[in-house]
Image (cartoon, rainbow, N blue to C red; front, side, top):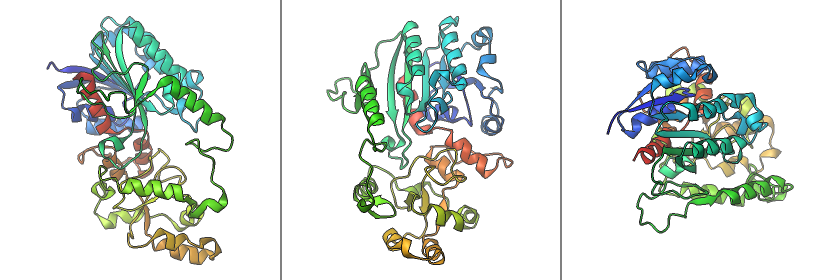
Amino acid sequence: MERVRVLELYSGIGGMHQALRASGIPSEVVVAVDVNTVANDVYMQNFPTTPLWPKTIEGISLKEFDRLSFDMILMSPPCQPFTRIGRQGDISDPRTRSFLYILDILPRLTKLPKYILLENVKGFETSTARDELIRTLEKCEYTYQEFLLSPTCLGIPNSRLRYFLIARLQSEPFTFQVPGRILTDFPSLDPANSRKFEGSICLKEFHSLVSSKDSASGSNDNGRQCPQKEDFLYKLETAEELERKQQQDNDLSLQMLKDFLQDDGEELSQFFLPPKSLLRYAFLLDIVTPSCRRSTCFTKGYGHYVEGTGSVLQMAEDIQLESVFKFFEALSEEEKLLKLSTLKLRYFTPREIANLHGFPPEFGFPDKVTIKQRYRLLGNSLNVQVVAKLILLLVG
């Protein structure tokens, strides 16, 4: 096929560019655009021949866009206006201005790009910004399909549920297209597959489901009632939660975490959790071992904040968590710390998170980029393998 000319917006450290390479389609990124100077340093080290514009998208004129003559747009607009823990300002949030500018520019381009791929957080699918995107795509006569996908779909032991949309200009519907529904797994490409509606959810049903969950008093993110104190077995774990984790660890379709870990023990010493964090957050940590087949989503605060930012690794696999946390509250601080230290808990390294995100071994960071900055950049990035497969679905 002809080489595809690609415009990479909100390029960050280059997750989209890396996915483009991983997809194997003949392509050239004609320009990458991002205002984050640290991310741009990482991008330039890994993609030195790609033109990189360190400017706002709103600062690019229609004429400049037209001169690029691109065939594909890859983009990950700012997610903060749509995150569950944020203010959910949607289009009223100033950080959506650049995205709305793209939607305004798109119909006015001299040559519409044939392909568009967008990534964002779960929550974007119920936003006004998403509705504006769909209106613009339909106005320009694009065929599109939406997804909510996690790397676990590809056997990668990391939960990172994200919204994706792929769109193709003036073409026949995708063979896997399900109008009005969001696909929650990668589709079969067999047009004769009669089970095409499995692994999808109706958008109207999804809106209703989200509303009912948000209004349910005393419920958690899964719509279930919050467990009472007597329901906990140990370490704030309920029987239901432990069973769910055990099912994931027994799922042979997922790889073990040890396939993504570093071996150099001496270098890893700096990643062990300090005593203060162990004592303060012991009950809140999501603890996994190298033989586990699961890990929670790594956010930009990983390594700096402990609660809810990602799993930590238990290097002493022979120690049972229950033996450490049973009757834990009755112990003195010194005894607690002694028990916790036997687990040898450490953070995943930036290299290990990059591995779980699908970045190849040769992908690196400039020496001047700190560990904290690396965690932040990776937390804002995407899973390369998921996007690579979507690019193949889009172009295929």
